[in-house]
Amino acid sequence: QVQLVESGGGLVQAGDSLRLSCAPSGASGYTFSNYILAWFRQAPGKEREFVAVIHWTGVSPYYADSVKGRFTISTANAKNTLYLQMNSLKPEDTAVYYCAAGRHYGTSENDYDRWGQGTQVTVSS
Image (cartoon, rainbow, N blue to C red; front, side, top):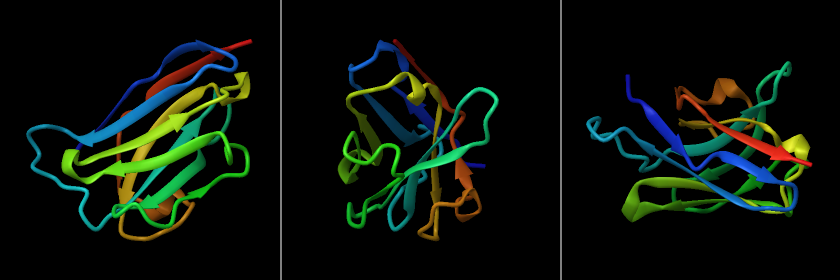
């Protein structure tokens, strides 16, 4: 099973920025080409929720209302990498963030069949 690897999480203060990255594990030889890529997050005691989605070519980004205007999803084809730029972070953004890849454009976890292990983002007030 191909492993996706997230990085870039950390502890920041409200109003700060972070950029998350996601790429296939080095030995897999897996490529994001022609996949739909997404970010989800799971806060303590809550179910995992959709954050943003994009086609590998960089078209059709779509965001959850809670992050619209603050977060930007993007891809870097040459680096086979997915990003999530998070600005104006709020304490309620605290969660484990997961990247996902699949063949169906959607906001449901069921649309994606490859997942990372997650990276913790903690925003203090």
